[in-house]
Length: 307
Image 1: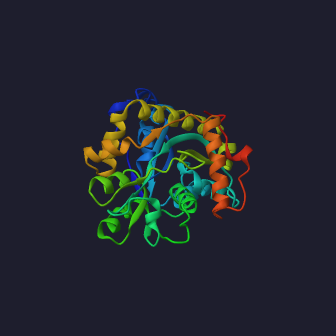
Image 2: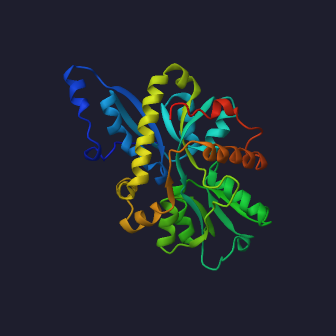
Image 3: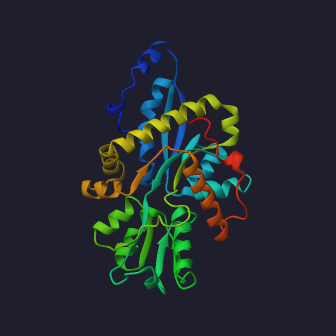
């Protein structure tokens, strides 16, 4: 895992920090877990928002969504931008987790090599996808509905590792998160085959997640973190240029790729019925996929009282 410091201090100045430091008060240190995908871009704004609240937040980036949620569950990081499929798996395996708010919808697509024009054409082909991800859940659903689930070979790779084997021809398609899906498409490694938002869960993807023990231990901290998350997410939604600049700087992508990939991101902190219905549809899809044996305890798993 790689730790990164935020870069948008100038955009979100924190005048209250001076007063706190002048009184000799030290900032409380916390860790925010995030991912190598642009769906989590809003988290890069949070450290500067939290300094006036007396919090020194370090961003810790994980290549694996399962590692990220394990870190939240065990307290290695305090909260995380959670891939909701991985969060759900942990919650049903004895690690009490709560989704506190929506974070970003969408953000992934299926990119295929030239000559593959329909999903059915993937029969007999190799597809790269991240294990345990919502991308995998949606892909499995589509393959079943096209009648080729038992006719493709899935190879599990983290998102940033998928474009290169697609370019080499080692893979025939990738079901990949942004910005890597757009990176592959604009570099000519493949073309957009399916934007996977027609499944029962729709664009459901990312949540702001904490462990139940931490929520019970320090609800005031959770309230402060959720407030910052909602504010940062709304800023990303209302100011696409910030999302573009974040993608360029944090993921070393060109402006062209950043601008195109951001169009496939739907930043939202709306955690009401539509978001919750998407979570419940995801659970049913995962059970059908044999990725989980049962649904989580919904009254514990969905905890939006801090929004």
